[in-house]
Image (cartoon, rainbow, N blue to C red; front, side, top):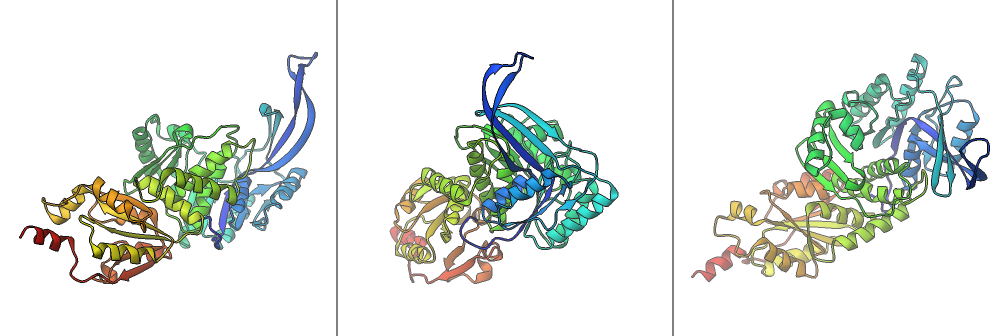
Amino acid sequence: MLAETQLAPIAVIGDVMVDRYITGSVSRISPEAPVPVLVHGAERIVPGGAANVAANAAALGAPVLLVGLVGEDEAASQLADALATYPGISLAHMVVDAKRPTITKTRVMSGRQQIVRIDAEVTRACDAAEEAALIGAAEAAIAKAGVVVLSDYAKGVLSDVVIAAAMAAAKARNVPVIVDPKRRTFEAYRGATLVTPNRRELAEATGLPDETDADAARAAEAAGRQFGGDVLVTRAEKGMTLWRQDGRVLHVPAEAREVFDVSGAGDTALAALAVSLAGGQSLEASVGIANAAAALAVAKLGTAVVTRAELRAALERTAAQIAPPGALVSREDACAVVAAWKAQGLRVVFTNGCFDLVHPGHVSLLEQSAAQGDRLVVALNTDASVRRLKGPSRPLQDEQARARVMGAMRCVDLVVLFDEETPLETIKALLPDVLVKGADYAPHEVVGADVVTANGGELVLVDLVAGKSTSSLVAKART
């Protein structure tokens, strides 16, 4: 959630780095060797690796507890200074070891073109003392966190022992864990809620292709079996694919953006995902937010952060493009629109029904529903769903006609279809702030009420207009 609300702290644990950029201009080739001569212009230091995840999460408004390993050197001081520009980041859990230099990546740039990258790093496994210090720091951070992020760059911090300890600490507190992986396979991440490989990492871990959406879903399922959690595949120009353990699959297309630099875009998406989950969004809605954040990141030069204001503006534009008022949209697009509304601090209301022949009772339900918040989403049973519920003679109007009528109601902001017998999966995906049903239901009978209230939402039962129903209208018409 990106509205001005208090977010749960995010513990970011992993390989922190310094990203140094040396910029200048090239106009000639060296007489000493066939290499360009860069006329030095400027230098800048930005957080990299897990530190970049932390910076992005803080820029999106979340308090961050950063756990990593740095040396007693100038690079560590430079990293601390760079992170100090993000007041939401606590460095109290950082581990300092004089035996291990702070990882530094230096990129030499001419304009927007990278000429060379120089890595100064030690990637050996941590010794027992370093692991013990990291475990203690991770457990202390997780004790205060609402979401845990493991940012694994295979630089030695996230050893099997450290990962296992972090998973155990998170499980004890029922805190979700998101992992950005760098292992050949994902068994070491058992206990994670979600692992977020890119296409190359997924292919290496499973040996399966990722060309089509169906390919991505199959490979993600194979990866999920390795550690027992959900999988979000970041697929560059192909967007993102979310595969869940219950078999649900969500494909989110990439947003069209001019790409200047992909450095750190995965960190930005990871941070946005964690912040959204910390704010109470569903995983499906959070994927849409992460996708929008990644699109903003690749439009920037170098390792960069995306601010809350930038992301909110992007989500608002996306919502307007996807769905004008009353539009019928897919469940995936509904997730993106609802996420954008919540990012603006709007209160989202949800109700559902067949709405076969709209009558005054329906109008009353919709008006009372709309009065509970700022935006109203109406979920309609598909034709197949109506037939299963009402019999072969129903519906009287097909789903497109019913959606058109519903969308024309001035109090309805969005329409979505569901093919199941209940709207439970749609409610889980959208996680509305308010769920509305008629007062003829008891609270325990309302499908999805437990999901909404567990997420901090509210169930509202509204009065019905006596004697008004589609069934009675149908019966009267047949007499």
